[in-house]
Image (cartoon, rainbow, N blue to C red; front, side):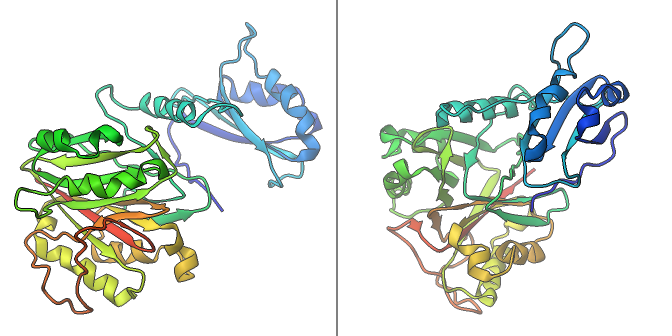
Length: 360
């Protein structure tokens, strides 16, 4: 089940109308709600033939069609024939686009990105990823893992002095990442969103980020995803004196007690003394099908750190590295010790958590 709770907003009217023979022309409905800004149609198969009639009757006096429209033929609604929902009022605007059968992924993503960016400031950079499931939270920071149904999550990161965030295309030219490292060194966190086409480059990319002494001193997280704005994938680097990060890997056989113990190590890094947010990259096999209950790992994190927003996704493989600044990796945890991955950064049946701290 998917749902959305829409709050009451001044001068925004949302009305529901039963779809039946009486509102073929929908004149009363239109008169009550004009001008309509958006119309959502949920029709049963028995009434599909009247949809065009209803929409045609929504044209303005000059014959133009000035509203966003969306909907589908569905199995059932609260009415046998179907339901129409109208949004109207001076404080609501809407847009709608159609992704056609022959539209390629790149075109579809460009349309979606453009539509999203229209609602953001001009200088705001946008990066997006399509995955098999998402992790998101509202303003209350309570996370929700959503699998196998349409959903969207995101985070808006403010501009902070001494913090640089750069996005790069994953391709053959940056496999060695020398120019990338030179521009961003020292890198504090690297988030990798690779498609299956770019998966073989992931280990080489991260290996190229080692410091002169051969050590890897940055947080790493990411996943193999369905698509990004680039065909092979993208990666995002956090650098600058006012950002710090840590990352841990939850392994396949880690029980809840060990997961809790690993999360506790974030406290010893000192990162939580500043404004933080976190990313969760989980294997698609580690959701409900793994635990037989929802929101297990994200809920443990939220219980320990209720004021840290958590977003993320489910992928077909996870990118991660155990990195805890100011915390000795050899230290034995209450529930075990960390595995130190030095050559392999692409994993399966794991979850990677990346904690990012901004000094504001």
